[in-house]
Length: 630
Image 1 (cartoon, rainbow, N blue to C red):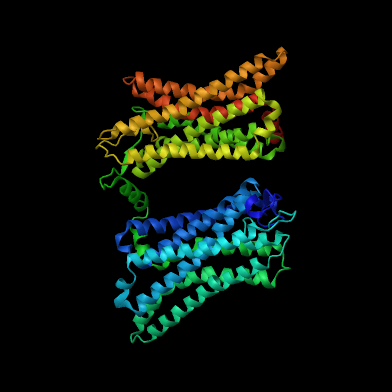
Image 2: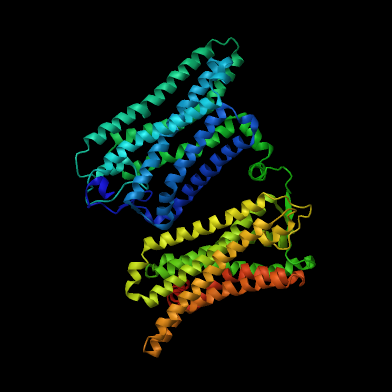
């Protein structure tokens, strides 16, 4: 960045504004509709892609262009999601200089791609109606691939020059942007230099893409309308126009908000800032949210395919794609405690209590840390990660366990079982990784106290959290893929109340050597390595503590680690017990294995909030304040 701008005076961050400005206290409530919009956009466009991928009859030019539109909408959604929800849910309004320019690139590139794909779709409609006999010969798969590549090259090459033109300019002292994401129009106002070249290039882009594309779309529909009016049958004319209706609505959804934003920006500069913010968000959110709805409702083939297999087609198609086999078990049978089904109602009482304590305890810990500024320190931020991990683990197993105990719902679909398998193991590995990060926090706090604030900055903690997520997800996915590819026997009965790898591997009718070796590698690289590193950190901590002259100070230093030590024991002791039972007590009664497995997953989420609430003075005091205030 310094070399590209020829200046060392570069703002390291920008401040993004909430939605709407001045209503920061209502961010939690405002986040609800935004979460709904993003969920609809991601699920809707993913559904469109999966339907087109799974149904061979939809492998036609019209639907291939629709796939490009869905991919573009997904890219636009995922580009703005981190900053928008980061501000609303976590009050993280800062964005680094580099991340801001990266977001500018993707926002404008995907916006231009949206326009370009709609232009390509209008060409598809023109050929389908005006030259139907040559449709298959003109729009071949090779031509469609070339069009897609041309769209990408056009948009990327259009966005890169203004990005470099903006980076070369010096920025003023103000770093405040007026939206919840980075836009070129917004950042150019912070520049303290002549922006004539930038403005002229922006005007060229508007003419070359934003104006040219809708004019060409209008031209294509003029030709389409001329051909339609030549059709003698009134019914056939309506049918031809109806084939274009989805595309017309998608064009309106993109260009109407775009024109609205431009009009507001040009002729309503002195309007309240909330108007500009709302218009900008409508412009970027409306197309990804409404396009999948439009094409699902207006396109008969997609609507029929969705209705035909509403619940099973998506995960089923993914599983068949991965396994290359249609012979998959449709469900597994889960068990809580075999042989005592008549007592399920009574057994559900302690389980219900455990889940309630886990959810309430971890939620309270998160609420206390969020509400109290004095707890916004590395130790408590890591504790927040631990509480979130425990909540994830709790919500992952709760549906199947309580479903069996309360409703005798012991069947779980093949896809849901693999989804639960993924989350159970991911959150278990995250628990181990977060405990390792917390041991590093205790090591720095005791062994290098003067450098504590400079080492464990908020940016470092965010990177550690991201590294933990990536580490655990990337560790679980290969095991998942290796298991999905294998054929399962006729028996679908699992021996626990949730799906996890050691239980499911026993139902495979094939060689599982690779799976076993990969499981052994995971046990070594995560569970064993984490525990060894935790022990190493406490060895270094103990060495530093023993050098302290005062007996009182030594006890105080050790007491600061007591909560973490208990959390480590609560996690690893049941895990060692389960492993020992699994390896050396295979012939023990099934109830032993079931109880040990449930203890391994239930005890840490239940005990961690209790341990930290009792042993940590600041949290205990804030909980008392919170309860007394309520």
